[in-house]
Length: 232
Ligand code: T5A
Ligand code: NA
Image (cartoon, rainbow, N blue to C red):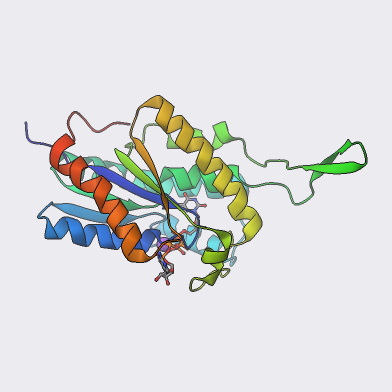
C-alpha cells in the first residue's frame, strides 16, 4: 500500500503568522516534490463561510452556540475531501483547524465578571459562556492532524502586525483566554498520543519560524512517513 499524505495544521492566536507559514510550507513541499494541498478555516467562500465572515466583521450577531456550530459545520463540509486527499497520498496543510474552533468558543466569557472576596481584594472569576466539553463535541471524529504547530505570539508583536483589531476577537483579553485553552488542548494531545503538538516562538522573524516548521516537517515526511489510516 502506498503511503498516505500527512495532515499538518497550523494554529495560533490572531496575527501569529499562520497564513504566512502555511504558504511558506506549501512552497517548501512543492520544491521537495511532495504532493500537497493548502486549505484554510474558516473557508469564507461557502454559504456557511459567508455567514461566519459576516459575524467576524460584526455585520451580524449570532448566538454563541450557533456560531460555534457553523465554524464546525464549515470543517465538516470539507472533511471527506481532506480524507480523500490524504488517502491519495497528498499532504494537506491546514491554516487553522478544529483547535481554533474549540479555543475561541471555549474562551468566551460573560462581560460581567463574578467576583469573590479574598481578604480585602476582590478576585474576578470569569464565567464561561460555553463549556470546553460542549465546544469539543462537534469536532469529534473530524480527521485528526498528524502534526500541529501552535504559533505563539506576544500581544505586543501581534498588535504591531498589519490589520490587527479589525475583526471580532482581535483584542488582548480574548486572546489571553484563547491562549489558555490552546495550552489545555496541547496537553491533551500530548497525553493522548494522537498526533504531535509543536509550540513555536512566532515573535521571531518569518524566515526563522519557517525554518523551524521545516525542521519538523522534513524528517516527518522523509523518515517517519505517515502510515495507517487517517486518524479521527
Ligand atoms: N475562529 C476560527 C473561530 O472562532 N473558530 C474557528 O473554528 C476558526 C477556524 C478569523 C477568526 O476566526 C476565529 C479565529 C479568528 O479570530 P482567520 O480567517 O484565520 O480567522 O484570521 P486571519 O485574519 O486570516 O488570520 P490571523 O489574523 O489569525 O493572521 P495570521 O494568519 O496568523 O497571520 P498572517 O500570516 O496573515 O500575518 C499577519 C501579518 O503579520 C506579518 C504578515 O506579513 C502580515 O502582515 N507577519 C510577520 N511579521 C513579522 N514577523 C513575523 N514572523 C511575521 N509573520 C507574519
Ligand atoms: Na490568517
